[in-house]
Length: 116
Length: 114
Image (cartoon, rainbow over all chains, first blue to last red; front, top):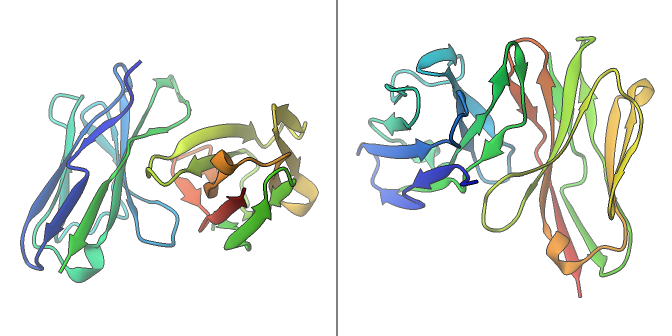
């Protein structure tokens, strides 16, 4: 079974520029997550989708970050404009859900963003 | 509030030694889930184990074992006879039964020296 795919793997941009990340979850996984992992820290949830609806975006900096999952499969995360403190690895994860029970999250390789 | 503490930032052991990674959590929930993930240098988080709050039975999987103690709010992870391939950052995480949000610790970087 194919894992969670993310692209690009690396991105370097200047502050105030825009950037977008793409995620393709494991086939059949209705739940998709975006995490931000700053160097030396654990992942922090940015947004959680259930199919194409947002379940939790309480920690998403909405003034500059946006995410969508239009067809309930692939998702994109955008930062506009980027700040230096956005430098981090952005991880996408997906999981199965049956009823109210969520299974384990499977993570992609991440996109390492450097803002200069 | 939920919190996961991994006090060990970095650990180095010589190959074949046993090593225990500590995890202490805080929650007022009665139902919750605890996880361990491995993050090798490639960056991908690899799921290792999930325990629910009602199951304190320790678990062994090959060289890996987990000790869950609700009385001390700990969920420690032991690698027996460590190998170089075990070198990675290991994260402990807590997930609430409602909301489904994960709370990760800051990770323990394990280096196994050949």
